[in-house]
Image (tube, rainbow, N blue to C red; front, side, top):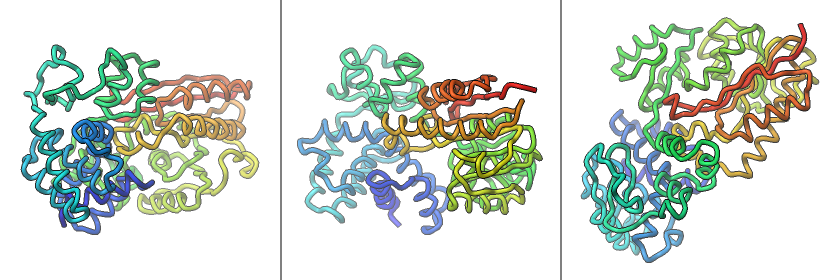
Length: 445
């Protein structure tokens, strides 16, 4: 199997469809019987080119007389991935990147092969990879592409002038939607925004946590070491470079992938039993079960609940799983709880490093739609909280519209509650994921 051709075909499905890159990668790992080296290359190539899509398309546009939008999807994807190898990967020989790309284009669109070859060689000739740690502050920002610790300097002006349009400049060189960059600049300022953009483009680490109903953290680490899986230890958990390295242990029910911030809400829901809304696919359910907490896990999706039940079986954990609309949970469950956990659907802007395609699928309109749904879910959850109890609200979003604004509106509509605390976690500060957690307390004994 030609890995570059496979990456291009998967990229077309992700960028021109609604499929998740991670799902297609896992399918390819199984069906193609790839070893760890090939899995690593395929993952880096696919996910990196998706993250840097806007930058790569911008470069194609600047070095081409023909609009990139007129190219067939497979050709566009092949060019993106070839440019990603040339500009972002320092271990791929230029000749190999260009030759393989041209061969793929020949096989699917022969008329574009000469164009692709000329474009890639023109970009490579204009780009100089600087030494690691080079200070670029004195260089023209319109010519510098920040690539980790080894920036690339182009021979001509290529990128938007930051003095004329800072959001556009940052959006192009860091490959994020301009509207999102503009939103972050308004809230965080330029320095914090640049740190966040860089974090989202760096190779992420995936936290693998032991399911304590099956094994301890020490036992999981011992298994990884025995299997020769490299990891970094953090707070008793294992940080992996690629999720594929941990899939075996997830399938066996020994572990789950759960980021640092994603694990915080359940620690604030220690009273048993806990009503968990929007519970599928079950990461927080397994976490609570591992702490000995009795859980009522509710979700309106029967398909997603099947995945939760399968995860419970693998982990030898027990929870009461119920299917129903969490916005009206108090009506059909007909009881109240000391603690309700509402980890709601969101825009995922706090986990853009881990979810490569998410930055291209979120929009201001989607955030507004989600905030309305989130408010309905919070209000439904608050109605199921007993006197003196709490609701823990969480998202993996960084957007105020989905976080603080939802909580403020909920407290306004339910004056019997008060804010017990809130925290926004920025991913470039945690070094992993980001998100928001708030505790709402019902007044009374």
